[in-house]
Length: 329
Image (cartoon, rainbow, N blue to C red; front, side):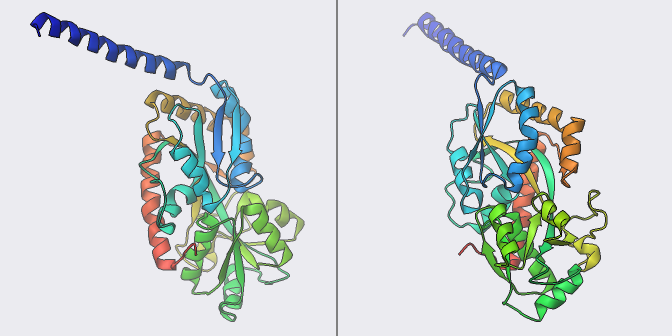
């Protein structure tokens, strides 16, 4: 083949590459052009869904499109994660993930069909969610964390605690607490926080490591009692509720995050645009006030910072799973 022929083919090849890059950039620039689906691994009415509903309208306004929630509850959020991990990286399928789905599950479940780090593209975290030890006073009439521990120690293996599902922070957070407090309780997983809370109200379980926003109503009604926050500092919304650390176990902390992720291979321009939209929503005073009104603190990070957070959490929760001996069987 002649040199001129080779040169001509090289120019054509270069033109094709440049054209493809230009088209990709143009597509990302115009994104989104249709509704976005955000998959949730827990049912409607869950703690995750409560936050999703707060940010939905502001995020739709920032992005200029409709957001559709697709509830795929099951396996501690793994069903939802699998759907998004295998989705096309076109910018129209995301997961509203948690420290459970993208931190805990990697250690708790031995046979996942995806990797919680390499098979996802982090966009941004949205909130830090405090967990709170919550009891049904008709089953265990403890007034504070220390008294709760004393009561449970007298009946090892006889009291049940509920959770929103295997692998959820409400599961592993309490497992972490059990080890730190030196108590022995039986874990009963439910399909989402609404079912777990109803079970506690019915007396099927005595307590739960509940996400604060899911039990505020029962706390105000007096049907459930909040004993201690899992945060390092007291939550401004409920300043009279001490932290677990100050009440009974120095240094104890267990906070979960919620955040947005897409499938791997997502265009960096789309990641940047979505991250900027989330940042704008989290700077909205009305959104901040609504989140604070249910005890949540906004948490914004760049996509790279969020990736580092997931990596760090994965390692930390692996240690909790190991120490607690928690299983999904």
